[in-house]
Length: 364
Ligand code: FES
Image (cartoon, rainbow, N blue to C red; front, top):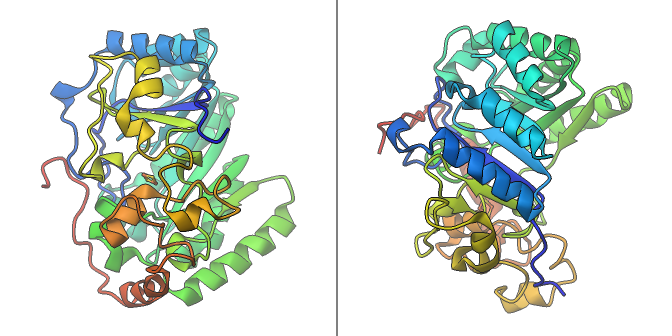
């Protein structure tokens, strides 16, 4: 039954690629969508209705910076009225009291605020945005005052991993319920900046021990999500819970993708919500079928007893590391490319501490 198409769980709505920050590990594609090409409000409203009809339970408003769109409260209210759980994934730097209250009144359930670093100089170096940390702290406190659930997203890498303890303390200080400690994933912008971002093995070991200690100390008061980064792992992650299985990602211009990096795969084309319904795309689009279930897998994966646990890992990473999106994810120790991955990480982690490419709209 592994290839049966169940309804998706969640929609990641990337409503804009506009963002005041320029993080060199941004998960957006390198070719960013311009404001003039974004879906209009009515198109997003229709998409939300289609998502609810398809059985989707959660909508994550993301970007870019989703607060760059003035219609965000309207989209949130519409999603909530359609019965969806609503989550806002934001940098926090545009979230003042009036906007927070408007989003709470619209029925927003949950907010995730990213933190680049607890060292202001480090945060500036990553985001190229001055005073971001102070604005994020203020925004996080407003979220709590508005009675909304709060998660802190700490994206970690070589330049900030030594301050992981301070990032956990930041989450405690703003009374977040959860902190996601997310190692950078190396495709798109982050692949361009891998030598700058890759942590050392010593840093990773120290961070893992620190998370163990913090979990024991904090109990359930602050939940810490943490996984070992792929380059140092023995088993791949079930990226997106399996391709075309749990998540749909819609780009600012309406392209419907199985994951945020899917457009890096050169031989796939993606349908647009302007021409097709979400239900048609989910059930029949060849790009979703390409790596759905287990039939597409190499023989090694098809014979593996974890094939319906990790669902073959990450296709975009397989492409980035082997040139073949259908290959075994090199994060798996059964991949012929696995042995090289650790060496690659070791070399990259000794790389020059220089940002090669900030995430900028005009960068090509
Ligand atoms: Fe595309 Fe993992 S990011 S499959």
